[in-house]
Image (cartoon, rainbow, N blue to C red; front, side, top):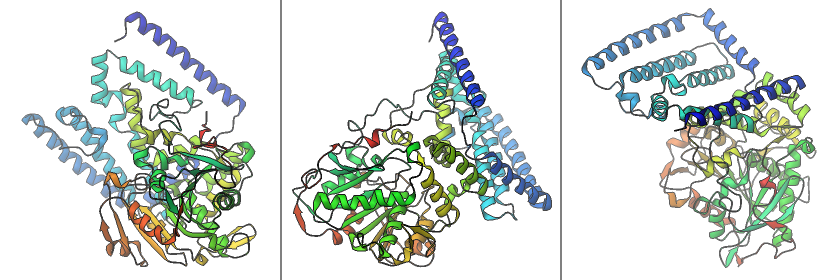
Length: 591
């Protein structure tokens, strides 16, 4: 514990830091610094106004929901009194990680608080979900915002109703609260006054030292990307190189966190010559970079660079998330046959990791692309030239708010603990900006208009593209619990392509479902050689497999790998080594 004098000194220092933060915030407001709120308050207001209009016109369902709530509440109260007189626990084992502390069940007061909250939470969300008369998009927004409110009000998030935090306060004499306030100030100072709890020890990892350590080199770069070629780990390799197109919404090293779960390293161990695009973290100078520029300076430039490095005209390509969407658009551009330098044959096969091509069911991300929010984002990006990385990170965190927001509020601020070192969360915090022109196009054309699925709906390089003309063999891997690219939506996109398609459904979510090495023996996957009209029909007729989907993909790739050739070292072709992997672009962290 702190000595009284030390505690007073620390409290004085914290008070001065808090005062400075308030002054800085007032100065920002006085300067009129550009800002945008996600979600947009106007969108929230409009959604709930629509809800209450329907409720006032048809109040009976809400009355019935209220009656059910009070009936359940009376039953809970009776159950609580019975447990009180018997001295037994209220509620059984709790799967909800927010209430894992034993005091939530062993202490009857906290048990009642927990059970009352869970009862109210369930009834509020069920009542909103059962309202009939809202259009689908508004209903989704209302349900999403309601869940955010309900989760924010969980008793675990407040000192007075969190038994673990109260116990820590008593045992430490309040030291946990002083440490928690210091953590809060550090987060506000680091994030320019924005409340973004630290998720991990940001000083525990170094790129190229304990994350992104697979040996390789940068062999090409331009304004938008560096191209990495990885050193071979076998004496012979397949003739056809493999190009990985990662998302630029975050950084490529999610595929190379550490040797035991690195997809990049595993592919080199299987005899592939692996190239990976590392996108620049854009600034104001990139404001006019368009989606088409990501195609030309990304995938098409990489094809030419790989030809120079290996002598091979064709590659096997794999795209992850938005990188897969770009790959699909590029394949459609090539399939049109207008650009003779890039015929469709230059990509021998295409693999899509949790990739949406049809955006008709975008999941909860669709909440953020209504008209008011798009207009607000457009105005902000027009002024700044880009969308800030923290704004994109905030959106993704809200999709899993209890795990990625409130868990760290409790751990860091109420309990006063340091977050644990975790490479995945370090990567998650290493956010990137979005260039204004590209992001405007992506949000409007893909999410809002769903134009990529329409023949001629999108024009790139003066070519009206049609994904149905893509005849390149394709492999789709999606994740059953993906909250960013729902597998039902990725399945709809897979059915649009005109060539042979293998669709595989893995377990877990957007990240863990992809980064799932065979040695882990987790999750499993489902496969079905047919592509019936509905995803439910596909799943019902699918076959389940144990373990990782990586070996299944590897087996599929073998048909397009070509003959065995001597392994290629970075720099051995016509492209010199510019710098060691992981390169300098990926090291550009946002302040």
